[in-house]
Each structure stands twice: as C-alpha cells, then as structure tokens.
Image 1 (cartoon, helix red, strand yellow):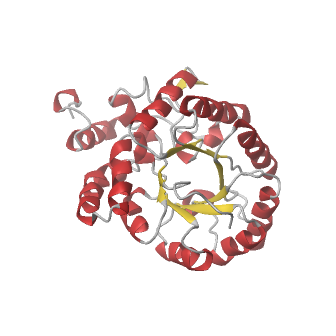
Image 2: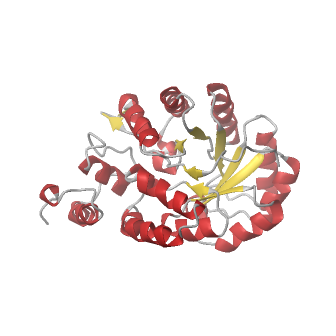
Length: 307
C-alpha cells in the first residue's frame, strides 16, 4: 500500500446531503453546509455519497458539487469524492474529473444492480485504479448494492493496486474489518458506514466515520472519534449513547428522507426537497423525529411540532 500521512483519511468524514431548490441543485446552500462541517470540526467530507442521492444526479451535477466543496474548503480539511456508479464508463469519467478537480481521494461503490462475481470486482477496481493516481477506497454497502465483497477480494485488488488505501464498510459484519486489518495491515483505512456501530468499529481499528448523522451533529461525531483516539472510553461511550437515537432515526425511512426533514426542522435546509423516486417523509413520522431532535438537544421544545 502507498505510504500515507498519519492524519490522511482519519477522523469524521460526513457524507453530505445534496440540497435541491425547485428541482435543481442548490449549490449556494451546499456551500453553506460544507463550511459548517469545517467550522464544527469534521476532518473531511464525502461529496455525492449515498446520502447525497448520487443516482439521482447527473455526472455534471456531481462534478460541480465536488468543485464547490473543494473551493469552499480551500485545503482546510480533506475532500473525498464518491465517484462510483453502476456503469464502469461513468465511474471512470467521474473519477477522472475528481482527480482533475483536486479531490484528496475517491470512494467507489461496488457496482450495484449488476451483481458481479468476486473476479469481476477484482478486474473492475484494478482497471479503474490503473486510470487514476487518486488514492482509492472501496465502498462496501451490500444492502444497497446487492453484492458483498470478500476480504480475499480486497486483498487481491490491493496486491495489484498500491493506491487502494481503504474501504468504507456499511455492513454489520465486523469480521471483515478484522480480516482486512490482519491481511493488509493497520494502515489500511477502514471507515464505519453504519452509524450505530461507530464505536465498536473504531475500537476494532477503524480509521474513521463516514456517517450520515454527521450532517446533523458534526461536532459530536468528531468528538466520538477524538475520544477513542485519546483512549477516553468512558467519554466515547457517553457520546455513543448521545448519538444512538439520532443514528437510529436516520433510518425510519430511506436515507436521506428523514435526514433532510430533520435538517429542515433545524433550519439547515430551506426545505427537505428530494428527487424521485424518493418522496417526502410520511406525516406520521414527523412528530417522532421532532421528539428525537428535542431529546438530543438539537431542537428546542417550543419548536417541536404537536403530535
């Protein structure tokens, strides 16, 4: 594996939502959300990850979002471009544009819907990696992509691709994390993509968190990472409990439906607008999420809706 700086791809990297206004991407609001992450202590961000509704965005929109993020951040924190698609051609195009734009790394999801074999995954990532100099991370999210990647497969890719530097693991299989750290060494960056498993993944050797809840409470998520690094496990467990209900609430409906509703309630978004086939949160769930925000201390009781 290529040599990495100690702080590179370590910490809290929230995958940002994509705000819309009247059916179009609201780049001005996105810039505000990016700046908020910097000010609240995130170590980096992910642009156009699952939370950003990438399959509903055009290649041009995804690239423009990345350019906005890089411009706003201006080197203060790291920017990871999520460049994966179901199409190899589109993935290669997005990755090339991310490199040209100045992204720090690329996060590439296993091709979804197609359900490739493990041999197909090896060839896919090796061929893609040979076309870019960006540090690459595999995005493993079998619940969405309908394909699981095995530890032996990741190791085989890394043997041919020195700049494969990590993996985002959005699955409850903690064995894979340990298998990879044993097979590729502790410098291989593994990020937690399952919010409720943030603490255990960090304790097992994970390098950081790519959690949707970081859109709501970026400082708290960054503090969880810091507490583990400082071996303050009592504080880490305390933050884990503080975040637990928020983490669960993200999935009361398909992400980012609940997240956008809660961000709009906090005044972070002008509206919870989505793109089809996602639709707005069911009205019955609104008071449930308002109560979660209230108990978390993010929403004042006087602002909560009446059930």
